Amino acid sequence: MDVSTILDPLNTAQREAVTNDSRSLLVLAGAGSGKTRALVHRIAWLLQVQNVPASGVLAVTFTNKAAKEMRARIGELLQMSPQGMWVGTFHGIAHRLLKSHWQDAGLPQNFQIIDSDDQLRMVKRLLKEHQLDETRWSPKSIQWYINGHKDEGRRAAHVDHHNDPHEKVLQKMYAAYEQACERAGQVDFGELLLRSHELWLKHPVLLQHYQQRFAHILVDEFQDTNAIQYAWLRVLAGDHCAITAVGDDDQSIYGWRGARIENIQSFETDFGNAQTIKLEQNYRSTNSILDAANAVIKNNTDRREKRLWSDKGRGEPITLWEFRDDEEEAQAIVEELNYNRRIKKVKWRDQAILF
Image (cartoon, rainbow, N blue to C red; front, side, top):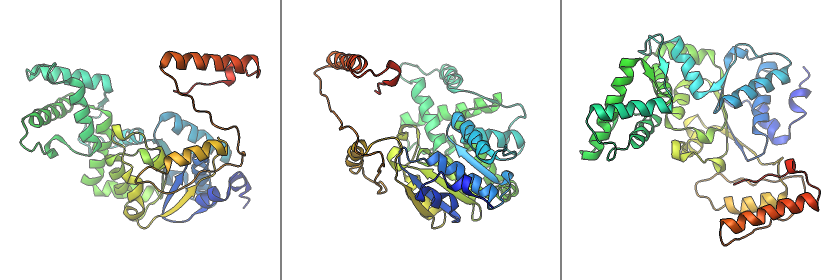
């Protein structure tokens, strides 16, 4: 079998990640190291070389755009549409499960998904029903409280308020919110994951069906998974499904919405002595930029050691500017853009400001 189209575009570390036959594989992919390419080519390797049926592959991403891009790249690489393969976000796949098994999940067949704005309106209505003053009990704070506990996999009944009066009210509002959603046949985004996780636990025969179906689970942006997503994956993978997690602890920036960097650190033991492969060659930047980034990142605590490098040479040195205020900063940026345009003949579309 000619595997050149799958392996030739890859560097040594990427090839190792693509062809690895470990049941549990953690790919630590630094910024700009071609992690999506490695993930897509690994899927192609499974389908073409290991003859895994498309229906036996589950690929999880974090955005609909990323899922669409992954489907397109897999199709382009294989020169065919991978029919039957599940590619989607955690929420999208959980929604698909609940739509198929709504009775087992304890939902009406036509249940509706509410967004953040709908959720906030419901919280405000419940505050009025319970005669609680919005100036004291912030609807946004209660919304965050509810979502935070759902991200951790906790129902209102599982929350310990420690007899704190403030916490008691928050727990009461969480419980009232759960009841209101149940009556209306509505689920929020956090509920999709929580309810589908409960579906696995309450119906082991159903869980076994999907464990037998999905021989391989692949997860992108693993550093952004929260507690309920991690638990969802652990239950589905069980002791038999092969799982590949691609992520970078240095790019974990979503702790404020429940992401747990500990998931990367726990992966190797929780998923059965997983093998780890590092992707350290960067394809975006020159070494002057990467050396500066490495010098800063190495001071982070609780990280896995890796050092990005590039074959693009040293490149221009980094310039650090300091300003008295934002006006002076803005003026300097404008002057720099104009200088690049007039003297260096750099087109406007080739200049960017990141802030």
